Length: 481
Image 1 (cartoon, rainbow, N blue to C red):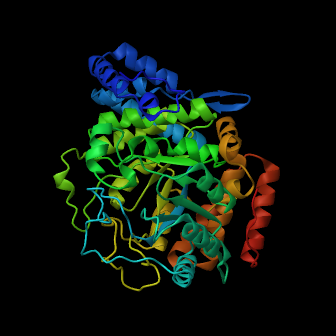
Image 2: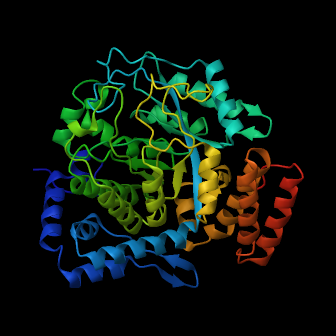
């Protein structure tokens, strides 16, 4: 039997099956234990002192009790607490990004993904560097500053050299006032050596979804290809951090396995990274399985309702208070709106999940990885966020100022990040409004900026931010705190 050890570098010890089963049993036994539930909620509340605001977070076991709890007023308390924590560390800022699919060649046999090796009728495509340049120009013309690049696993068609060359191309494209300032990378598990190369290429966050933490399910869902190796895949974040990548992003694909199991595994992974490397996941993504070419989500009978999905988002925010939480265009505008309040801090906008989809007028469907539920343009997403009282942020300052890994986390934990993130978000929104926004979006955006500037607590920062925003109006770009 594998023994649970949070500090172990072996996948089956830091994600221990027996420990998850014990946790779920404990949670089920205590789901109506109001005294314990109140103690857990109290532990998670933000505490303010002269150094800032601190949150203890929760262990996978504590959080699992809250997930099992179905007492309506306690669930409401969880939602209120998630909202409070979200506001304490992220304010009303929502970071905007777009995925860029480079290639859908893939040698894996993942049964829930249309890129799987046996799918012979999907159109296989790999972007040339010239095509990548066109895609980046199209994305810059929309107003994007931050991309997440995606590629299938194929050592022949998508070797690490191709990924590195593509990153170089993306950073080199400067079109009008456009520039991609941060490239996050979502590619298959690889070696420490390759992670070093990605770090040297100037990537932001390395993202890899576990898909499922349940080993038996994992092996069935990934029957063939290099991804079949559960341990190699699950230990990838440790190798990435050994390779010098400060910021890593976790995620499971909800709907493949029972959600309570996945939730416990996800939090165990976060605890492991914090324990071993001194810094937890920079981001956690919460995708749900969706319809795609030759994939029917109804075949997977572990799908979760919108209410359970919202509860999971709230509890991730409470348990891992400092992490960025990402939601994609897989979700409808209604679902996205609900979870923004409960903890999500990053959204994609105007996304296309096909290879080479941005340079074309019509949204292509022949190379899509999944159906997009939120098909609004970036400008519509920006306008929607502003109307809801959020600041759409295109900020990449922390990454470019070296505020990554534990440096970012210590700033975030002390609450100091508010003094740079809030004005930086306003300045990048101002850039967007000047260069790309439709008249209606520009009007409400300007009004929001004027109001939000007054909320900056430090008078010197407020004055400087106002000057920078005036400079942006006059045509200058890329100011940051």
